[in-house]
Amino acid sequence: MSDKAKAKEAIKRLKIETPSWAYGNSGTRFKVFGQPGVPRDPFEKIEDAAQVHKYTGAAPTVALHIPWDKVEDYAKLAKHASDLGVKLGTINSNTFQDDDYKLGSVCNPDPKIRKKAVQHLIDCIEIMNITGVQDLKLWFADGTNYPGQDNIADRQNRLAESLAEVYKHLSGNQRMLLEYKFFEPAFYHTDVPDWGTSFAHCLQLGDRALVCVDTGHHAPGTNIEYIVAVLLRAKKLGAFDFNSRFYADDDLIVGAADPFQLFRIMHEVNINGGFEVGTPVSYVLDQCHNIEAKVPGQIRSILNVQEAVAKALLVDQTALKSAQQSGDVLLANDVLMDAYNTDVRPLLVEVRQEQGLDGDPMGAFKKSGYLAKIAAERVGGNQAGWGA
Ligand code: PSV
Ligand code: MN
Image (cartoon, rainbow, N blue to C red; front, top):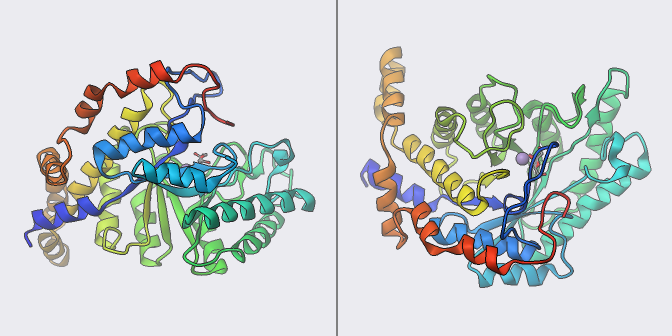
């Protein structure tokens, strides 16, 4: 197989999960702007997600957030998804929107509150049991705002104990993904601030515990691709949450702020086996579309990921290895930049056409009139948003 054919095959296999919360209203602490046609419930969110898959052929699963996507009957929600040609994906827990969690959830000094948080995580595993979903994603808002507020090491012990309790409930192919974030909502210290902390807990827990790298959760200038390479080497990279940031946890469209960084990340993923058949790495968007339309926002995100991946797959590995081995610094850098500077859009059009899709998913979606249709149909009720 030629390099181009190999790249096309890998792109066709690449699946990117979209998050249910991207379809609901979102905003900043200053304002949440509503948009016409926004889903009123998880069923409608899945209908929107199915559109993203319909036009890209690359987004067959939808991540849920519990309790935002709480329903009476999860089997019914799973059936609704499969009727629309998609499946339910990662279950994201939420231990940050209850008054009890003011001083933290699984790290809270009060054992009763820790127990409540752990029970929520076990309830999330129960939803996975019903729906056949593989991954539980854990992101904790835990931390402190002031030096002296709590004992940092004690909080680590509480975290380890709580995670171990939840871990015991995993079965079959189920996995636990521990996400890190260096600040916010806690401002002085966060209990899982970085990949090292997540990695240490995952190592202690066992094989089913893996690190989730959210691209927006690093300090400016952090070499994220280094983290990716190290985690892949240790077989501890479970998932990505893709988005981009200019200043903080902006949750903007992946690849919008720094496409070169996204390419560098994808290059490390590629050379460390992350796109191989049977890869343990799952690729998920974790974004919010505050001012732009949501469904096309997700479609654009998928295309941005595909472009970065295609460029990474086109790196001439033989030339790169030989330049690296002979110590030719400039040539090695040149080989990498050559792939980055390749216009891969025609290749991606070919890939889509070979899959029976429109070569231009953004254009095809626009022409479909779906946004006008949902704006006309979804009248009344409460639009979904944070906390609903
Ligand atoms: C909060 O920062 C966050 O964006 C985390 O990245 C989670 O993955 C996501 O929310 C959903 O809880
Ligand atoms: Mn995330």
